[in-house]
Amino acid sequence: MALKVAVIGATGSVGKQTLEVIDRFPDKFVPTLLVGGKNVELLKILGKKYGCSVFSPWLHGPAELPLDKLESSDIMVYAASTVDYLNYMSHFLGLGKPVCLSTKEIIVEAWPLIESFSGLIRPVDSEHSALWRIGAKEPGVKSIYVVGSGGSLRDRKREEIENATLDQVLSHPVWNMGPKVTFDSAFLINKSMEVIEASHLFNLRGEQISIVIERTGSIHALVDFVDGSRNVFFSKPTMLIPIAYALSYPSILPLDEETVRQPGDALGYRLDKPDFDRFPWGKLGHYALELGYTSRMAFSVADEIAFECFKDKIMKPSDIYDFLVKAIEDYRAISYPESITEYFSLRHDMIEKMWKEVRAI
Image 1 (spheres, rainbow, N blue to C red):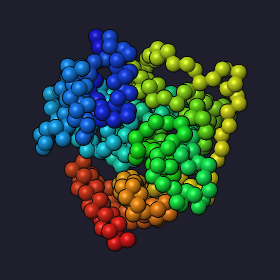
Image 2 (image 1 turned 180 degrees about the vertical axis):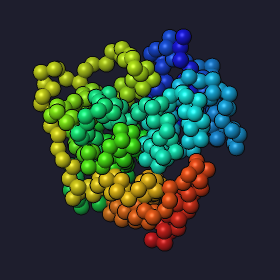
Image 3 (image 1 turned 180 degrees about the horizontal axis):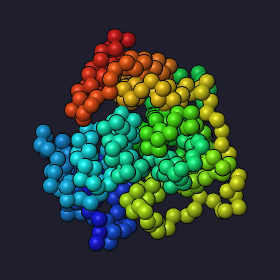
Image 4 (image 1 turned 90 degrees about the vertical axis):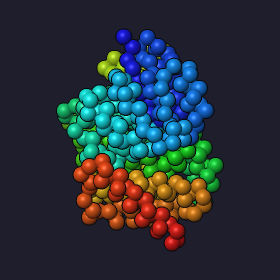
């Protein structure tokens, strides 16, 4: 019988690719609830295509997401670029049902609130999916490597990075992603976030996690073990593979994707250390790990604001760095919320405080 799938963020990049996987395997998966954002026309089209329920705040106003449709689903894909549906995700996990999670903000910001359900969370981020598949959760892990392609500014000089335009920042050389993720990638902010994600998902210390650059996007993760062995994950730079794996776990679906390269070439990969002089934002994940959960939450919230400020030409890259560091440090002594309600309250306060600081620039 086909699994009933609820997709949060169905009209975004990962959501649409999730539906592509579902289309390839209609005997295995069927959408029962599609949640979207402002693109309500596409959401309506998808609802008609699959004959399933749809929801968007822009379509239904203040109405609540239909819990009956959510609860009748077997599995959730959380691919929205917002934490707004955290309550529903937590409720779904509380039913003992798995969540395929690609929204790094939830893992970075809200991990203490969902950690008890960690066994039901299946990472969809390409790096963390790869780490999961090659043993990052297994005993005997010595260290792991979060791999990036370097982003759109990887070959720019420091002065060029400081004066980069929005178009330059959003022109990723390997991946086709949403604008916020592409922005984060350009400054290695996404790698900082992924360091925090990896620490939470795989229960590892910051010093066990390193960032490396592999320019083709063909290597997604490496895991070193205490016996001197190393696992490496190769694949084409496509989100279809981690999405399909999360949906079908522990099975592997026949996607018929070409392998990344011939087996004899696999030893020829090149890994580079990030240039933190040009990309100091890439060190902030380790810094936030040192300072605690609330600092990690503040880092993620400040990053959202920094993206808006960069788009509106309020901040240059160096301003973004200073802004993120200040956010991390300002919240180091603040206790982490004990409930989701308190989490959203603190998040609201953070956003208000940070925007006041921006307006004072």
